[in-house]
Length: 419
Image 1 (spheres, one colour):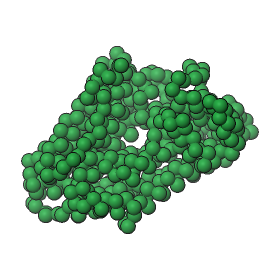
Image 2 (tube, helix red, strand yellow):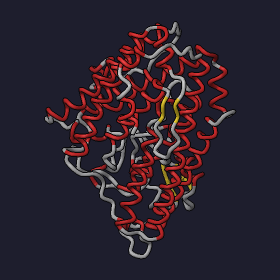
Image 3 (tube, one colour):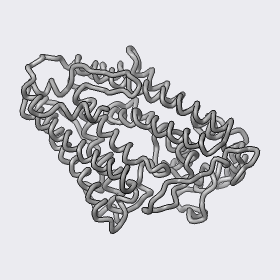
Image 4 (tube, helix red, strand yellow):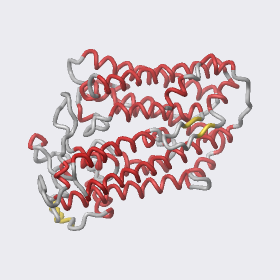
């Protein structure tokens, strides 16, 4: 696994490495190659997920539902390692919401528990329930939802300009496979029964439309991933966009991704905010209790672009001239410091992952009054913040200008979170 390989690359080893004189173009090629491999793996694992879902639809047993859930979890690993490409690459950031938007108001998609409520002041689509209603009547508007297909799902993504109206991507599929997690910060994930997909022995109604939605959402995920895999192939749109920025612009893109994911996105919006509020609704993979792995793979993705290495679950490994080597040629001590900070962050996330796999899920860790679990999450946040400070020093050492990392009120202005 990537974590085991990369942990071996210590600060001391970095300092001892002789100068290799790799150009920025060499580093950017490796960066592009890692993206190409990561999105190709994401596409391949999504196709494997489709096979498992097709089997579930054909034979809706608990065994096949479990297999589909396992395929979804496996598909998340390579995808989350690509998130470092979102910040700095406009083509990725503009596309990402179609496949990984969260949180979602699940009442837009399917049935929900009474505790969910029946309306929302900020979202008129809060309980529209696409699966139950061939015709949606929302705020005086009538929407034909008789045929659930990719076009319908795309048209309702962020309906009413509400970001929580998520109808496509990994998390829509996750909700359909697991159902709501009604356990709060207690143990347990979603428990949707396989019979929700059994048209002959249907539970909770609308099983034919539910299977249609699951199939359409999975096909759409594959189509979207095909788009991004092609964009990072040699000669693809994303490669061209990166090359057009020039050497400094390309290096700035790499570091913008590292710093923004480290700080504002992962440390802030995905972790510190939920910890402050003790709110499981702020958990990334909230239906499946897979959040610890999503966060862990984000950290691995940051390491990938620093070390110029990608350890593929499908054998599409990449290794090439790296930003780490380039910085070491300029300032060996700083490169060693960056590596040490990345190693410390990885260790903190490995501790969190181990806790999730042996003691309690991530949503339990952030629960109010869970002193030990809170401390594990806070240690991971602190490590991310600490490594971001060194990323900023790398930016200065390379003489790059006009780089702004994503921020988060949870880190920069905590009192605003409670206003």
